[in-house]
Length: 483
Image 1 (cartoon, rainbow, N blue to C red):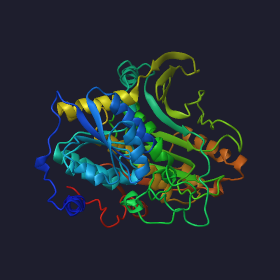
Image 2 (cartoon, one colour):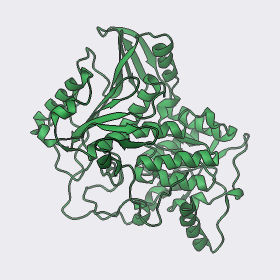
Image 3 (cartoon, one colour):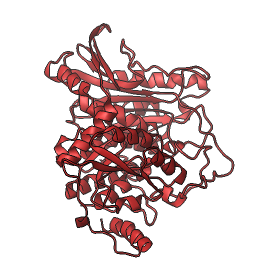
């Protein structure tokens, strides 16, 4: 971790003309005191978490940091907090106990590592990592420093999840689980394509905003938010909404008994739009595990150009799965899970039982604050290792897409013997037709074998996939290996 200490602390020492503080200078809020929180990232999600922390009787929002000085100033003024541009000033402030990281994805791990090095507790938004290797470094740093680190997969704090797990696993209300079908079928629009690079807003410290990412021309129309669809800074829809859904699947269906899949095959493409985005707007994958397989269908396209709503993905089941959620297919029926609600139905689709959720963002934030005050990391609902594993499913699906080549339908079908898999593949292929596209516009991966213990691909095609496990970092913003 020496590189992180040097980069963060040498900056502040030079700026202040003093020696940076040592880890021993930091103290945590006592159980009877407020936890003083800083928001790192003042976009929409930063605003949501600022509101949640400000409503907690045990927390006080004291600082907002964002490379865009306009954004940090506006959010800080709303809560009468301090506004800064550089997050390193927050990390060396002894008046900050914990940080909530709501930066773009490419900053999540480095910001978390710097915060842990500074003795702060951390709430970090999903996905934990931009690459699987750097997520492991955050897990290692958390263990070494005995810090409190919560991942922003807020469904973990919904009491409904425990109720659903009891119904499925203890009561065996639907019998044995056969497979899971996960969906994110939420329409989005093109992000445009410029002929000349976009200039960042004058209020943005662009070198700091870019941080660990490569300095590339920006050819999209909007600077903020649409970084999601550029693999240099974002993780596509798979890492945006997919991580929420797959984390639910790991929790409710697998009971966290499976860390990451052992085999994966995927296909996808960016179709219907001629824009600057890199991540697929149609993406589907099969994850094989030691317990049962999971399929995921992701689409940002409507049923047809100009039509409202999302596409439906049934995979041969007599029920429509939630557009943002999952179906646990069991021998005696189906559990339909999504944010804030769940339903158990029989094999004909008749309702057996309903499940209702709670105020998950506030519950999740309060769970983090309670753990900070008690110093009990075991009380966290979404600790860092769970977040790392759930993010891993998304990272692996993105790697399979990036390692893909020309579409090979038969090779894709041969990836799983599950009867629902070829049905899902056929449905996703048919979805392309209204957009003047077809399978030739997609890429598909070979079957990739993944070792959850080493967190590397092994066997055939491993080399072409392993190169995506770790990125190259820019100077001053390097994530170093932590044993």
